[in-house]
Amino acid sequence: MRTAACTTVFAVVILVLSLTGSQMATAVTCSVTELSPCLPAITSSSPPSGTCCAKLKEQKPCLCGYIKNPSLRSYVTSPNTRKVARACGVPIPQC
Image 1 (tube, helix red, strand yellow):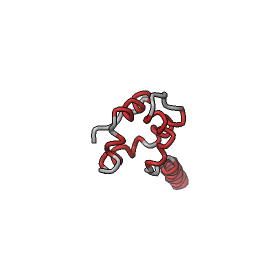
Image 2 (cartoon, rainbow, N blue to C red):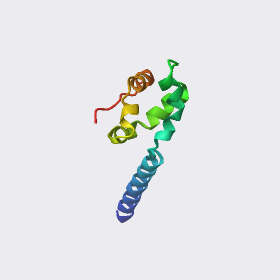
Image 3 (cartoon, rainbow, N blue to C red):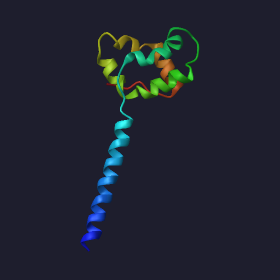
Image 4 (cartoon, rainbow, N blue to C red):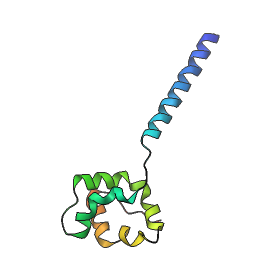
């Protein structure tokens, strides 16, 4: 019986460690420069590139931080940025 309990505990520990590792691998570094592939679409009427949309989706958890930053807010909430975000399927959050 004791061996079965140890095996179960070991399996749970391995499961928790593997889940924690996968969450750490998906951590995002918030850097507004990561959105530079979106500049052509934001500053012109061209549609956003696949790279732009991928970066915008990647940086989605960071958008509130950018909006709360007085020097970035007007860029992140501009009509053109909203248009690009909408085309990429990324809602601009209300923070």
